[in-house]
Image (cartoon, rainbow, N blue to C red):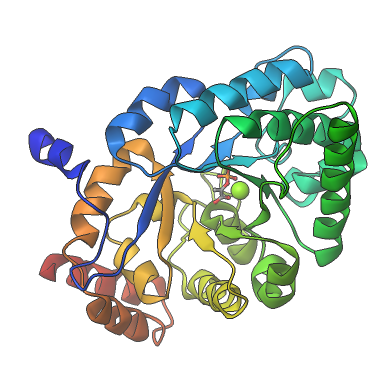
Length: 331
Ligand code: PEP
Ligand code: MG
């Protein structure tokens, strides 16, 4: 079985009906780089940069960050690396940010609903400026995309883009050579607001990545880190699926690339449904890539579309799960 999965590495990720898919890897620590190379992933769909902050006692500086990003980008050997600026807050805690007095946790009893992700960065633009500068400088090493976490409004994207362009102008004045067009600036679609407003957001964002981990939490009002409500936290809840469908269709209408990078993107049982909803790009734990590839190579788009059509008509998680399992048993 291991050998068979190994051989899959060189085979294309396409459906039996011919449509090409993109299977990429999520990266949480640079130590995972060799695994990504072995997995057959075509690039990194989500580079979580929290590791730079979480174990650090001081804020990582521009040069230090640039070196890390450049190493990852070079290792991807021409495949795209999607770097997400730091998503701190909620269940993600950071020593360096707290020590720097940037925690902003204040009186917040619900950190996931507080100053998290892009909200924190817009309140403390210095962190964002340093990170943008490091990414832009590293981007000479290969293709890069830059991604914003926890977006709820169009104006947040505009504000971040202004900072992005300002940082690029400053670097050019310093004599740093950047390409004529900057790396695309896109967003995580991981709040219900972002999914519902997909059309507007897709006009401001150059690409979208659906973060089903948080989208599930915020849609179902069930903390992703709480054992108490674990049984209520279900990414296949029809409410979550409708938001995935809404934002996917919005992105496709605006001709914006859209992908899924939450945990379900690496679940071979769920991917056929996502394909049926129109998604073609998935980013997952490196170890999941071969299994997902094996499954998608046996799928026809028409079958996936029919599955999605059935799933979108039922109103309970149990029914969704039953349909998906029955489909998987037939593949
Ligand atoms: C998500 O929310 O689905 C996601 C991919 O981001 P993270 O798990 O890092 O919050
Ligand atoms: Mg998230």
